[in-house]
Image 1 (cartoon, rainbow, N blue to C red):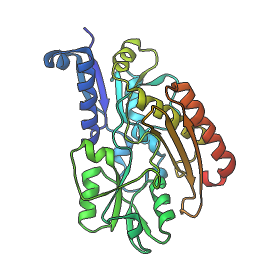
Image 2 (tube, rainbow, N blue to C red):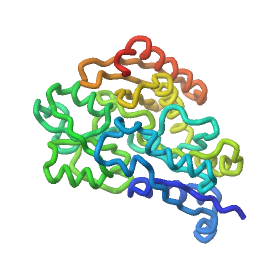
Image 3 (cartoon, rainbow, N blue to C red):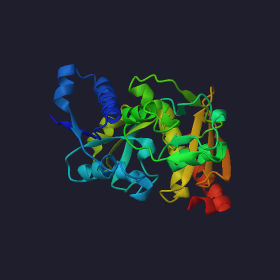
Length: 309
């Protein structure tokens, strides 16, 4: 009987996502609680991204720092599956790995906390974030705000906001929902504030040649999330900006099964932006979604290369 080791970061959000993934895997196999405990093992792996708290990740190597050690653990066999917030995964991963499943997408929107609306921002206000994408969109909405370094897990950032270290901050709605937190917040519509590629999606990564694990994970793959992820990540991969680039892309499903894909790149100071958009027909396959995402990425790269750093 094979025991599957499920790797994760150790933050409360990462653990909550991993327990959800393990519950879905057990349900798909119809394992009893005892069988699930015997077949699935949670393994915490500390990542470089978790250890760096005194500077923006962009200065230390970018979002890949949240998955580097997890992929090393996959390589050396310490784990069989790695659970990721897909917004933390670079657009291109090594061919020896694959994203074998995407769980159903949570709310992909960003949440504004501390003030009631984007229009309430005023020059001189302090907004805490280390995300180039969020910072650029905030500065685009209100030139003159002060962007402050704001690292830490979700609760740490909520505590910093409560202490008045900044006037406002932004967090992912998905993380707040998965942790069961309900602070006063304003969800920002994607039409006005585009999310990161993969935001709200939990992905399961494994070794490409491990057929047993791919089959295990594939049983919990959500088609709508996987199609959206294919479009968003293809766009991100083509843009291939520096770790300081402000890139946003989101695929929104329609009631008829279609999908509207929007992407944008921003100047770091919010002074300029370029947009691209396209639509997927109902029933589109993952390769069609990736094709559209790649087309939007190339369009933006050709028109706005200077914004990508």
